Image (cartoon, rainbow over all chains, first blue to last red; front, side, top):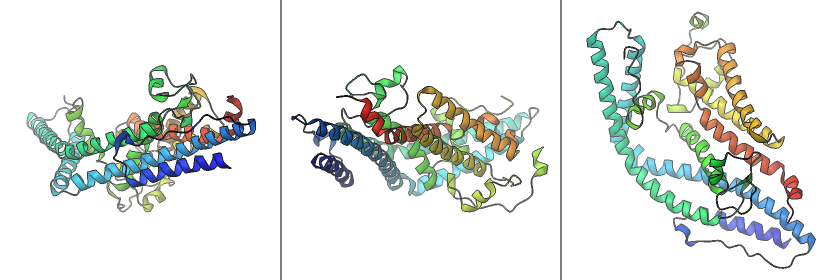
Length: 238
Length: 137
């Protein structure tokens, strides 16, 4: 069946490109040959092929997400995780976080001023270590940002205008800008590449980090909130 | 409170930061298991949430359960099942882990994203024929 074979070839081409590593931006644009006169049987077969392609696209995007998550962790491992400075800082932060957490749990409201000052000093020290840790991570963030900008340019051009999945619900209006991005028609249950990719990344990346043992500890994440966000409450006595 | 019901067990080794050894999963279904390491227990809650997200995502997509009813149903079942597990079955003291809210939000957003992926994939897969007939050229 010639039309089905064209769909398979398309999928194979995309797959080969992914395996090649593709940091070539949007130079590689796939155009799909279209309009010619078709019989009703061929039209039906064509629609079935489109739906099969949609299913293949869905799986492909999940696969892309897994690969990009592994790539990001790989880059971070090469640039950051394997360095002695990072290992030392991470161990220090985790030790201090756990110690601080235990101290905060045992301290009472009637604790002396000395103890409160001691805890504040420890918090300050932890905050500085967290900041240093973030600085060390900055290298990999730039590298990942550069790679992913190029990769996203390529993927966006590959999947431009293609409905990659169907959603069983209509997204909220402010999310439709993302879920229906660059898609023709008014069917808001059509899902674009970028929306599915973001969902995949949100779910898969953290799970991969946890499986590989690269996720930061909870205590460290909690204490680090003071650097990137609002400072954590400094105990019951504040 | 619940500490008196727990038996003393030798500390179980755990892989770093989130991955769990097989021995941890053997404690999961035992209501009398002791959880000395808080992170270990929170990791169990986290992975349970991911499993529930995958299972519900596939079921919701195949049924299909359309609209926000499906999403609300997922949120309720995800939070409810885990709450019953740690509160009624394991009878742990939630305050030791920062309260019910901390346990409820452990891994919730990741599981929600995973649920959305599974539901979109299974809905697209399970209804190819239906979508084919509904769409006219």
